[in-house]
Image (cartoon, rainbow over all chains, first blue to last red):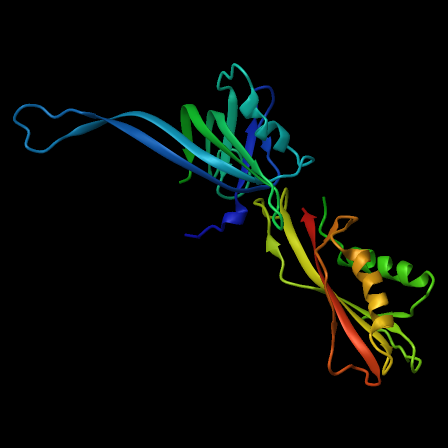
Amino acid sequence: MATIRGESGSVQFETGSGSLAAVVGTRSWSLTTTKETLDTSVHGNTFRQFVGSMISGSGTVELVYDPDATGQAAFIEDVIKAGDTADASFELFTTGSSAGSDSVAFGGIITDMEISSTVGELVVASCSFITSGTITSNLE
Amino acid sequence: MAAADLNSIRATIEGRLATELASSPAIPVVFHNMPYEPTPNSSFVQCLTTFGANEYLSQGLTTNSRNRIVGVVVFNIFSAAGVGPGANYVIGKRIRDLYNRVNVSGVFFDAPTGPEALASPAPEGYFQTQVRVTFESIEEL
């Protein structure tokens, strides 16, 4: 068993017309996966019971903005892509960058991008996304 | 992308000062670990560049990652004792203007502190003020 430090993480992304590649300059990422539930309680039950239903996810990626950093422009500008068919692919790594290892992979849409510039601080961009389709977890 | 060359950063900082103080009126400048015998009742500047606590800036371990390298440059400005601070502050302004919020070769300088008069000059026999400028550089691996 080994704990993992956040700085060992990374993000790979492609907009739908290429292959996954590192987004340089990511500072953090988060992913929340949610499973909806269906109430299957029937007459006679005294305890409510459920079955699992639709699974979805959402999260954020924060970047230290650098217009020349590989992958950043495509990532932060994906939000203004019109008629987005959810063909973008993400792979979020807790450590390393080997496909299918220590990561979560999914298709998705960037739904929000916020970039901020403050005196005395680095310019930071934050993107929110939702998943679309299968979420493949390789966190084991 | 490569690990930062600290001597390159140091050269950027010190070279800028050496060029400025070589212009008229020229002021002798001495850097870390250099011998210097000051001339009595004259002015000179000591420039001390020190690197500090660096920090992670992005994810990615040894590739596709960035660190923030920070440091401070201390300028000790010496001038003749007993004749007021004017001549000393003239040098202080030259140094302050040289680094004030500029970005030189990827080295970002913050707003300078000083010149602050020091009560106990070292070496003795001079009027000493100090200008300090913090700086940072982004290391891209």
